[in-house]
Image 1: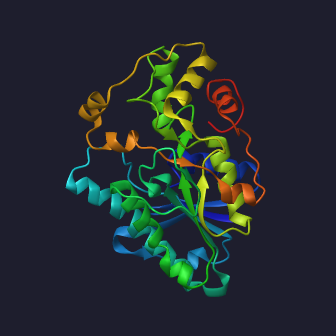
Image 2: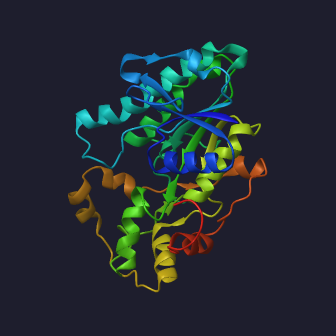
Length: 302
């Protein structure tokens, strides 16, 4: 397949590029500077600049870009940055794909389980109603930004991604060193559901969806979401470490501000669309995921 990727230098994008290249696919990156080789395509979402012809003959466009929601405190200005960094590039790509008509590639578009808001122990599938809150509003606007492509009849997939378990990056990559030192523990009460997925399965699922007969929202989560405390304790057990230190909610709010409320939110999301399409997980349960993420010498994605 010939694949174009936006947001290719983040945790998921980097792993996806490596996986696709290793499996013989042709990959080109969208970059916000002058292209330095034939494997790059320049674009500027802030100016709505993208050469539609550069997407001709492409099988899939994957958009993973967006400002990190936990990178800064949620001032009004940064809230606008988080929203615009998602909706503007997505709308630009969606219009470009729509302009290709019958030759349009599939648009595989990032989203998040934050779409559902804080839902406690409610079982969430792709048919569940949207939730409330800043991140829920962002995810909904993010998905709406693909309307030009959808209205043109292009296949669009919305990747409602959960907590990505990685050894080296993302929010989980920050937690893992603390657990290795015996300093890990639940954030707050720990009874909020974490819809986790390993980076290996995240990348495999995205690759699967490029050619699968699936459109619309897809929960990128493992089949067994678990309370946050269980996730931390299972990883600690795989490392032979305790996980008794608990971070109280007020301390978390002092550290990260309003983002704490979303860290403590609960989405018991399950991947019904993936399972119905026959996708099989390499790490379907928490024990398997914990064994993989704690093995420094294990093969596979980062």
